[in-house]
Image (cartoon, rainbow, N blue to C red; front, side, top):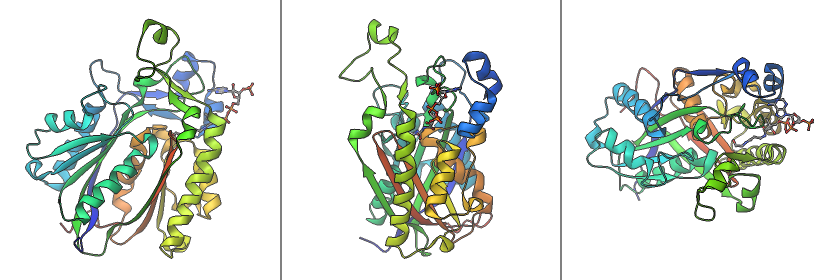
Length: 336
Ligand code: UT7
């Protein structure tokens, strides 16, 4: 082991141009802007409309922006990790496709499927490679084209999800900042409440599965809601206690953006004032693996070296977790 910590040294994200508003959804299913706004906080979401484009295309756009900003050399990238539930294809990994499209010559790459918690699972894994001194530059993507698995005749799910990709560059730092701690959890028995019924090895795609609309997101919202609030709050409290932090020590809570009411209830249960919570669900909806990087990207200008930040997620699986990190740079003064 080395004394290195792994720190986010750059972040970028991409959302497609097309905006699907609540008003438009009113024309597709039996819903109202008022219902969606009061029950979820969502006003609009971005959708990747152009045929033939997938998750990797959004990820590549995000990475191109990242390379431009950080001046990182693509040849120096050691690993590409893509957290996604909407891979371009069943195999090979979307991370491989991203690496190819970015002309990365020296990286190995793989995907992580931990649903909405995938990005922090990936960040945790990447940080261990860096702490061990084995690798120095890792791209971690959180990217999902949720519109590819959403049934736009199902009003209980189609109002929630959007498409987006975010990416961070993770590098060793010695300024005391970076990923300080992480706690990850899984409870596979929760899979019954949120999953995609067909298309896997148990129920491969067939005419029957397509006719039964089983290739879309299936969710029992109320149950998922309950577990999301308690698990995101409890794991955030656990990681703060473990690191002897109070809410006063934390500059930002970055919760997975699944529902504004879940975010607010989680913040209340932890004891966070809402003005310390990153919230942008109103403009993007739930972008699954994209939500956390999308928040950090939008708030990047406000983040200062040494800011204590808690990332907290909950998703299908069930999976959940929290990361405690110290932000490693001021936007106009990247130390690396
Ligand atoms: O990121 C992964 C984790 N996912 C989550 O964290 C999502 C967790 N769940 C939720 O966010 C919420 O449960 C939903 C937004 C999915 C649903 O909100 P809810 O307040 O739990 O509503 P509900 O399912 O209890 O439905 C209440 C009523 C029902 O009608 P009845 O049975 O009371 O007559 C639904 O049929 O609202 C109806 N409804 C709608 N009405 C208008 C459900 N969807 C809609 C809709 N427009 N889009």
